[in-house]
Image 1 (cartoon, one colour):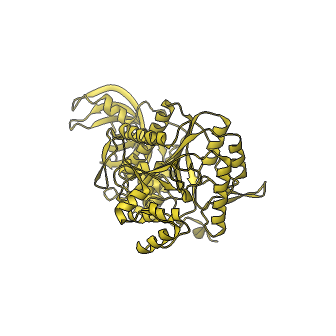
Image 2 (spheres, helix red, strand yellow):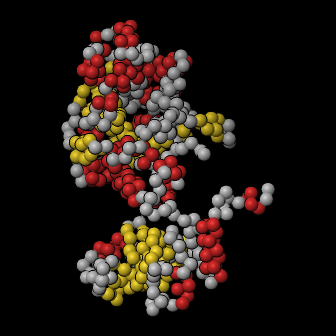
Image 3 (cartoon, one colour):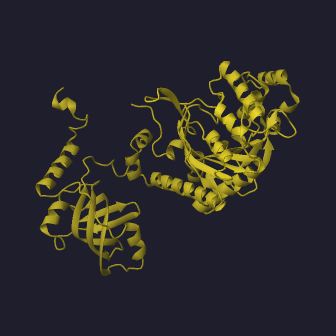
Length: 494
């Protein structure tokens, strides 16, 4: 392979070549273009707050050291807009303030370079807070130009593939990820205040379980066994409840499901999953309302906000409606009065493909006719036993279980059960799932013998709750796609 072929495809880009030349010129001046550190005294945002009352034209004797990325240069580098994570500040580079060595460095700077600056703070007659530079240090010479200033990074696909450029050029993208961090912190704070203990459980499972989903498979060479990236932490968290680690515990971490992508689905996603002993699913409803409302109040300062032009009101309490009741309202069909055969005939009437059982038929009718109409927060109860192998049976209707899903803007946000604690019942549910799997349902759960064994040592009555962090962040940041709230979403390779 020739030298030209071994180089990156854009190695001959003339703009890049010019920057490489400037990097080499810096080295020739004895300047290291990629140094080890730079001691800062302030960030731009701190200076803006500290000198908010400084009058136009006023100068100070306050010496500061700041660092950031050059986003604009005017008058051959005399004026530089320097951005850091907290904001922007103007740098004034003048021959009367800088020595020749520093002036030589300034002449070799480009937009996109990271630099450190030392100097005195003043406010220009036009009101711009400015640092009069007495020293300039190169912290990273950028070899590639940033996207064009005024159009920014408009290519959505490129924004996701080169997220670092998206974050440099598009402040709203940066704000979204920062708000996500505050959402997670607010969740942790709320749960810690209620006495919950945070735990960690395995990402690699010998048996995929805790949800109905198709897993990713990997292989452990030393053990020579296949392992599965976890689809849910549920069964390990309930093992910890059996062991008595705490009566209240939670985990915030990644799950992985080998499924399609959509504006609301990514193969790896973040969930909160928690369990509390000695309560049932009604306690989880109240906790869901309190938790989501607290997060919104903390992050947004309000319980009312707009998503996609629609006002959402998170004020508790939220309505509780059964799945069958909602389907009856939309279709005129009461599945609770139908047997297996009649439920399948009802699907024909609704123009939905037939399913394997009564419970799946009710779920399909709900999915097709109800879900997208649930705009304001609502707890949907009365889930079929056929699709809920880990939930306790309803106390009055054997075809249902004590389970709810919370919907906002037509999306499932939370899923909770009165957890199944009877080991014999659990084994029978697993066996029914295995039969469905043998009949071709790839997402049916597998029999986990060790989990059943754990139940035989006694799992206290408990409520469990899972909340999708990504979808919650989408709502609270008015983001149209799950890719907007995940720093590095899964994409098809080019």
